[in-house]
Amino acid sequence: MSTSFLPARIAVSRWVPGERLDAPEADPAPVPGAPVVGVLALQGDVLEHRRALRRCGAEVVLVRDLDGLAGVDGLILPGGESTTIGKLLERFGMLGPLRRRIDAGLPVLGTCAGMILLSDELDQDTVQPLVGGLAVRTRRNAFGRQRDSFDTRIEVSALAGGPLDVSFIRAPRVEAVLDDDVEVLAEVGGYPVMVRQGHLLATAFHPEVTGDDRVHHALVEAVRASRPHADGGVAHG
Ligand code: GLN
Image (cartoon, rainbow, N blue to C red; front, top):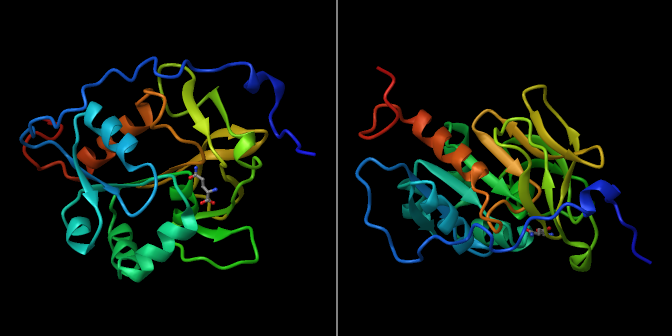
């Protein structure tokens, strides 16, 4: 028998699929000075993130190797299968270089499997390659199996504009915060599902499939802020 981990009030409030997904699919002309944001494209829902980032004015690069990684000012680790993505990062020699870029301040958004990969620890006995950097202990598949996936609206303390539309798909959750630097931005059932630690942002859910782009906007703004002297970056007088 499956158990529902959801408070009833969450299950009744749903976003409307496709409501805001009306952006054109064609490759947009590059905008000079646009922040260059990569999406790690080894496995997972890469194209949805590319679409969302484009709607936020970023130039998007699909990162599949070290050269791709070297060329980006920010990065998304997408949802998918964290074991697969981690093993591919290891096999392609990208784990160490990615860790070093993160240590040097690269703004990164990890969503779902991406949150798992960013975590310093997992709440499980089996070992899998992790990127790390985010001082949390995360539990994979914490809301149940595929059939327990759900769409919802959640309150996110750091985002203006009301509740955020998101999808939880075999989602993890944070079981423990391991450092005072980690800010909990949203919770479900008393567990953190969105956290920020400096330049690292992580969501247990998928913010890229609903057309509500505020999480991607937050990343793009963090990327702009991390390179304030670039042409077309945010001017501060
Ligand atoms: N359950 C997957 C994992 O453990 C994550 C699912 C997702 O990214 N939607 O990697």
